[in-house]
Image 1 (spheres, helix red, strand yellow):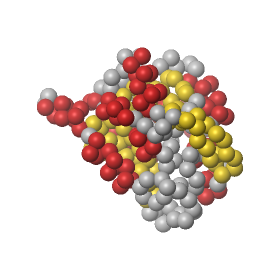
Image 2 (cartoon, rainbow, N blue to C red):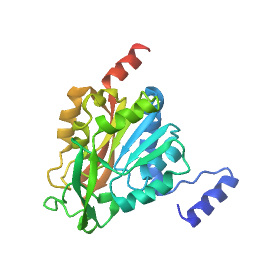
Image 3 (cartoon, rainbow, N blue to C red):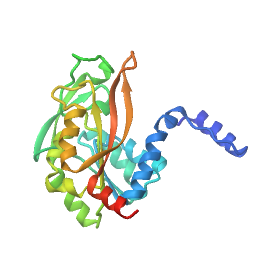
Image 4 (cartoon, helix red, strand yellow):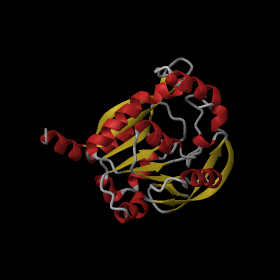
Amino acid sequence: MNALEKRLIDAADRFGLALMPKWRMVRLPMAEHLGSVFRKYGIDAVIDVGANVGQYGDFLRNEVGFEGWILSFEPHPTTFATLARHVEADERWLAFKMALGAAPGTATLHVAGHSTLNSLREPDFAATEMAALKRRIVQEEEVPVETFDRQVMPLLQQHGLHRPYLKMDTQGFDLEVLRGAGEGLGSLAGLQFEGSIVPLYRDMPSYAEMLEHLSPRGFSISGLFPVAHDAALQLLEFDCIMVSTNHARRILDAQ
């Protein structure tokens, strides 16, 4: 929010009116839906994989109203340094300089023109040129990779957290994160991934492949929210929110 927007909102507030920036209005449906999911499922921790500088954590705090733990994972050193400074004042927000994947080790991070598009996969421009300049590789760095099962599960146990929610925004690496979850996948009350209709990175799974992996493992769709369209308004990506069918069954049985 820039200074002008803040002055307008403050002025409207003095007259009992409510103004909202356009970017916040676009995200409002997902914020309201997540708030409902978090309350109904008792979410006490969010694992933020592909955290960048903490935008999703801010969204949770400021727009969803989530007050629980946030565990953010970001492998790019420069971006992580910004994230680490950002979370210092929040005692329930921890940051870790690593990627999560199917197996521990190291991997090549393709650093893009815009840091939100950094990926462990290479850009694919065959299907669309959407944000092409922002996705072009400007640098490559070797980064550490851990697994959800080895890294996240001990943290959840350490802090006594029992109903986690997994958010993934890894630019094509979400399925690898899930493959590294092991038995930890069953601990999740819900999760969120960025479903790809048109591949923006090489060898990235489609939204259908993600659903084929998750549905038989006990997750059902709760909400779908558009992320990006091309110039012809064809949908390229959407956020898919899923909930644990076991948790859902208990909620329904309690009605």
